[in-house]
Length: 448
Image 1 (cartoon, rainbow, N blue to C red):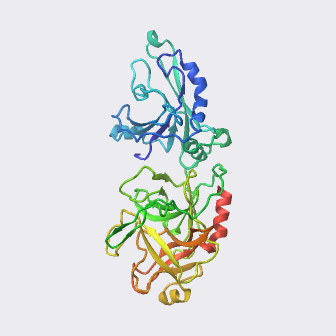
Image 2: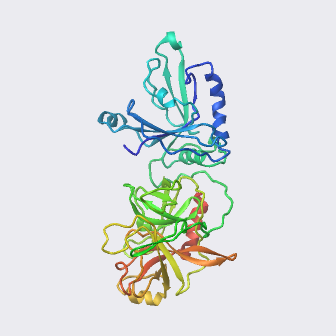
Image 3: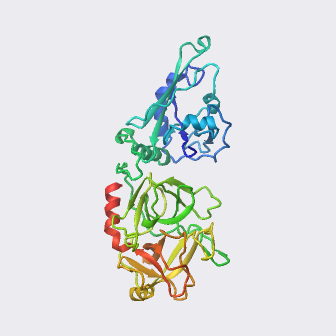
């Protein structure tokens, strides 16, 4: 139940919410306009405050706007159920229902708590097809507030639905959206076939990283330059542990290995040091997974999958290859996996290594006991001095090429498997991405 919480980005539409109820009617008429106006410029907020004390089985925290041009004094509120036993019993029947709304009132947290004047809030109503919900409370002391009824409206969504895409886009993008475009359809399945809304976006340059970077050397290898591989993605399991990697190839699509697919996945973008964040990290639940339909668990053939994000992200993406890589071409791999086969855990900081492409005949000779299909390619050194290892699966084999007088990287391979880590004459096996361009483009074109 700890993963279920309410996210309040609030323009509350309500009656009598401000205790001086002379202003409530005007606020109700204008609130639906404010949230769209605030999206003209990307909002900027402070870090989260500490969680409040438990009140009516709810804990709350908030962010405050620090840029009047974009969010004009608004606050973002987040709620989660308290972990007390009685509270867990109260919320055990709740599903992944999320609430989002926006309020400029400075004492919102106080007003949400128990009141001597007002009754408790009713439960939030079911999420409508237009991604809206509401709740009410009545005046208990007629001498103070008469027979007033306060009504609070908000956006809402269930995870992995069209409403999630709509609401998160509404919050995180400067584009204006119309909720009537997205009919609400709640489906609990992880592999739902519901199509999220399309977003028109201009084609961006691929494979070109940000220029600001600094190199750090550590014992046993090289730490990747910060921002050098901005499309490299950390893939997390249900316990929020990084166990695989991936490559951002489109604003809403991550390429990874099929054997990294789990019932529930999260991704972290812009990550470098997993122990700390500089504020640019983005973590989100995968909206939908597309494992390759012909993946073979025994031979590990067709070890490729696509992860669809709940919303588009703004940042560099890797290119898809226009041809197979050439033998002896030196490419790069990166990840948070083990730097030594004897290590129990991977490293907290992103590492990289340079590996040459190995001829297919040499690769098959090295792996006589394995099937090395035409969908696989080998990369590595004969000596085994550098290699991928446990925890690096799903990450990209990035090969450089000249593009308009600049170096651009394409994802030629996906880290798949190997015979140990860093063993002599045992190269790493990678899925040949070029062979799957048709499948990749089909999935992206039909489900974006």
